[in-house]
Image (cartoon, rainbow, N blue to C red; front, side, top):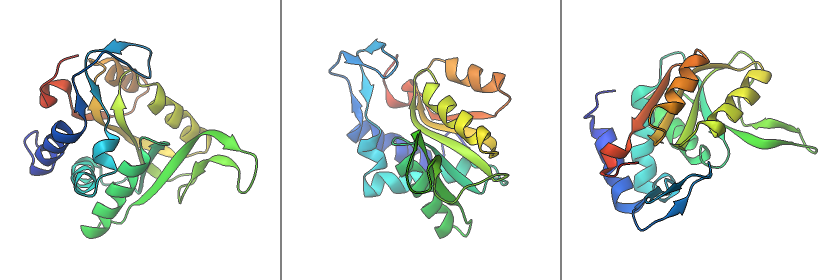
Length: 186
């Protein structure tokens, strides 16, 4: 993606206006404490924000990807927004979700939505600090025979840690936005 693409800039502006908090301290999912926080759901669950999210993700998807998703809850609105942006652009995509644990009723399992063995997917995440949520999704998808073409995070605050872990697993990784783009530093 062009670092200055219009979709990325709309996404950055929406996140800055609605999702970035600098009145910390905040305890992150990883347990780390930070003086800034990003609640990406303030953008991913907003109509205008979701359009920016979907278009920004669509801009960077590799051609072989047929479905997008990741660990529920953070990836869910991103996946739906990307699938809708794809439909609007004439690129069919399916959205899916990875449950945190398998259900013991209904269809069971951890994968929800139209994704299955041999599908080629992009794993999505809203905010990455350590990469643990994305690897939880990667493991569940791999166990189900789903092939992962790339990992995309909206905001990477890991200072390169997540990128290194994903690269070590042999999967291309892309962070759409870094703290510098948002005017905050880790």
